[in-house]
Every structure is written in C-alpha cells, then in structure tokens.
Image (cartoon, rainbow, N blue to C red; front, side):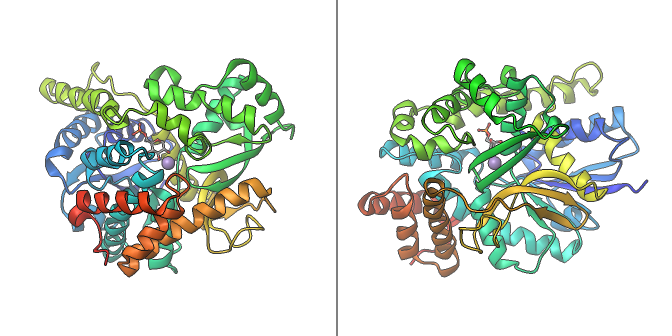
Length: 441
Ligand code: G6P
Ligand code: MN
C-alpha cells in the first residue's frame, strides 16, 4: 500500500491536534510516510508539534513526523497539502468582528465587512503559498479550507486557471448533513444531499436516502418545526454555535422549501443578528477562552508528562475526519460524494459561468465531478448573484489595487448596502490591516 506524504499549513491552528489524532488513528486505512506541520509562527506551532511527536512516537512510530517553519522542508515531495492558514491569527479575526460591529454592521469571520477584510489578507498569502508549493511539489493536491473560502477560491481561479489540483472545500455543508442525520436518527452516510449556493451561502434541495431514494427533507422539515435543530456534536459546541444551528428552525419557518446552510441567517436576518452579537465579546473571545486555551493547555500537559499514554483529552472532530476522508477519496479514487467549491459552468444553470459555486460532486483521483442542479428559483438567484458580484469586486480590488472596487464591493454587500457606511468601514479596515492588505489606491 502506498504511503503518503502530507503537510498541514497552519500547524499552529487550534484544529491541528485533532487532525493529528485522526491521522494517527487512521494509519491502517490511510498510511502515511511523512507528516509535516508548517507555520510561519514557530512559537505558536511548537507545543502542537511537540505533542504530535509524542503522539506518533507512542502510537505510530513508523510515521516520520516533524514540524518546521521552512518552506522547502514543508513542501518537498508532498502528496497532499492541507491548507488551513489564518492570516493575522485571532488578533485580526477579532478586529474583523469588532470593527464592523461597533459601527452597527455584521462582523463575522467570513461574512460581511469582516469577511471582506479577511478575504484580502488571505488572498495575498494564499497566492504566495501556492507558488511556493508548486516550486517544490508540482503534483501535490492542495486541499484548501482557509477562509474566507469563497473569496480565496475566486482569487486562485484567476491566478492559477490551469492548476487542476487545487480543491476548495468547506466542512459546513457536511456538518449540516451530519446534524440532519442526528435529527432523523440515521447514519449521515445514508443521506445523499442535493445542494446549491456559494461557500457559506447555500441550500439543500433534497436529502435522499441512498438506499431507497426517498427524499427525507420533508420529514426533516417536520422534525425541525417540532424540535428545532442541533449540531451533530452539540455536546462539544459553544453556546454561540448552538444558537446558530438553532436558528435554522426560524429560517425554515420563513422559507420552508429548502434546508439552509447555517450561515444564511446573516444575510436573511441581519437586524436580528446585530441585536444578538456583542461587539465587546465576539466568537474570537469565545474561542480564546475555550478551544484555544484547552488545546494549548492540553499540549503543554502532555509535553510535561513526556507521553500521551492515558492522557490525551483532545478530541477528534468531524472537521478533521471530513478533510481526511476527502484526501482518501482522491488518493484511492473512491468517487464518494462531497459538497465542494468549483467554477459554475452551468451547474446552476441560471447563474453566470465564472462564479465559484458550491455543489455536490463525486470526488476521485482526477478531482471533483460536480453535479448540476438546473435553474434555481428567483429568490435564491437574486441573493446569490448579489453576493457573487460582491465577491468578484473584492477580488478585483485585490488584483487592481483599487480602492474604488473595494468601495463598490462593500456597498454591494447585502450586510452593508450603503456607500457612506461602506467607505467608513473600509477606511477603518484599511487602517487596522496595514501591510496585511494590498495597497488600495
Ligand atoms: C465552520 C466553517 C469554517 C469556519 C469554522 C469556524 O467549520 O465551515 O469555515 O472557519 O466553522 O469555527 P470557529 O469555531 O472557529 O468559530
Ligand atoms: Mn467553511
């Protein structure tokens, strides 16, 4: 059995230890030759890297595990690159959230003005990273889930139009499917979704039972109406995520025909969301006081003990399991179905061809073979076209160094929708982001 070489870019991420645990457990199904963590912040990555060393030493010593800040060491001979960079780390995520919120605008990791700022930061570093990767690993599969995935995907489409081994993908659609399976009381593999939209902005039109072909969406609609909606891993979630999933019930009361992605609520209920978001305590604060603290404390505890045996309290999450599953589908040409991001080209028949859309696809060694959904109803088309225009203008602003395009993007963003506010928030974001941003003239 071939053994694979994998690098995780963003080794210092709070999600990395969960990935390491999953990789370690899956050595029989997906054997690795080499697993490398790469981060430009060596200090942050170190405790996670040291934890990883102990983990593999104790459980899978045959895997060559290491961590590095060196580009050549990170990328040479890689088969898969797991891209999970967070440019500016949580310090900048906090500003993405709080600067807009203090002005009465939605500030969120990937949505609204916050997502715009993160988009410009990520685009710059992602493009650079892809050039670095191609220098040392021309054939590697780049699995990108760095956010905001919609904007990153559009930027990479333009910069690397002929690179067929970049896959932009997000776990949230699968998280919703898993949650639906919890409501329906079945294994999530039983559900075969039909989905359309953009990243963090889409809907499920059907959830078919793979065995019988029955559409389980009507049944799920009733369950959600009666009992609400929970993430599959509700017991491990912070309150804000429980609220976010819970709000799927309201969305389905108002727009019952499809099952929404949880992120749709920002676009459909911006006033409600604003009332319930606290500009002084955002998701970043919650993560810092929760997941980030837990993960680093746990790593340090293990390092002190010098062993992982009987100690590891870090849980594997659905996110890691999902991404590894994606890599295995490519490695073993399994052609399983996943919801992925790809160029439209008629998949959503009544939307522009060059939009980066999110739909179900069969995924194998030759990449995704996406499945079209035909025409979508006017309501959804209207919402999505506005968002595509916003995303494209954001990427235009990046490539053209254009303040004017940035202003147009934010004015068009459904969560701003006002040129004066757009200019105000843009100026504040430019100031706060400094060299993270391209120059906007
Ligand atoms: C989901 C989304 C990701 C996003 C993450 C945020 O998994 O698909 O794109 O980054 O949630 O999670 P956090 O716990 O950091 O708020
Ligand atoms: Mn996502």
